[in-house]
Length: 276
Image 1 (cartoon, rainbow, N blue to C red):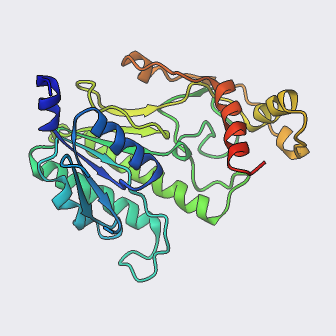
Image 2 (cartoon, helix red, strand yellow):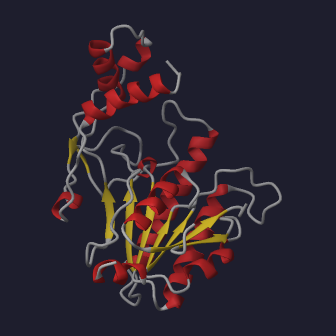
Image 3 (cartoon, rainbow, N blue to C red):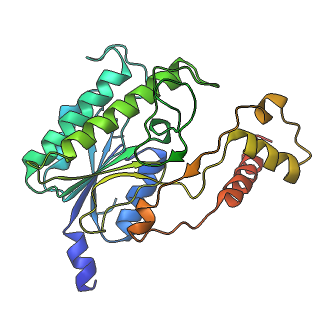
């Protein structure tokens, strides 16, 4: 083990929701890069650098032990299960309460330098606050007006959207408080990063391109004519929206995959999984 690896092994990183799709991949990546990982799971049923802790997002005080001694904290855990029998009767209250508690624990630990929160793309939208149309530019200043009905939505999506939006706004507000030395990073995407770049703070949108559902349908129609798509997928208001976010790229991040690659990979995965 070289000196850099030894230094990283002494650096503890906490990952809440370590058993999730993103969480499990993140834990694997952190271990490969030499970090000591504290991962929280809803139930405990590794190696010496992986320490597992039982913690439930509906009982956020359970995360204290896992966070103690860590330098970085990735907060991935999100309430998506049935809430019956828990203190909080809805996911929105549980999500916000967990964010506040985890921030408090990070500040009180005196070891955590940076909190990375995996926000969701559902919290970012070019839709105007009054629902009258769309903004001309999509960037980090855009938030989803969750009080407006949108196509292809249901009660679960509405509740999830409001929970993730309010939680991200809450955590950013805390991060902007100059009295706190804790650096806060929120990533509105499925990507998790922001660990090693020094002095990075604030909200980041992560998308290599911005395309509409109609543009997706047109691409699949032209490149996969064997699939028959419903006409409703080709319809919708014309949106002349400019992708205006370069914050991640300005920090040195570069995208590996464009929209075409992502759409093609979706078809390949669906074939492998037997869905098409």
